[in-house]
Image (tube, rainbow, N blue to C red):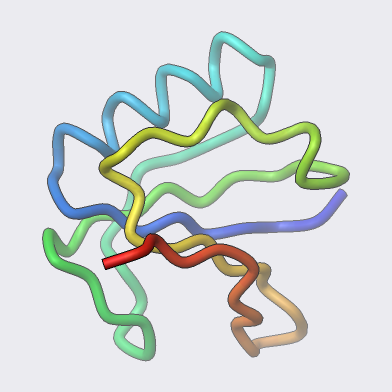
Length: 81
């Protein structure tokens, strides 16, 4: 399992994504965004998944998704502006 962090444009988007994770049996927790990542709302969802195909459906509130790789963040998705 890989660990991922999704950041959002709003707190509501984070809550919706956390609910989508629960519906897909993807372990997830809402938490403050790590300082080294920027975020519009300051709230993120840390979740675990094997591959991107295991992710819940992305919503329009997602700013970015990064994979946690030994203390580094590897961006795997970024919303178009």
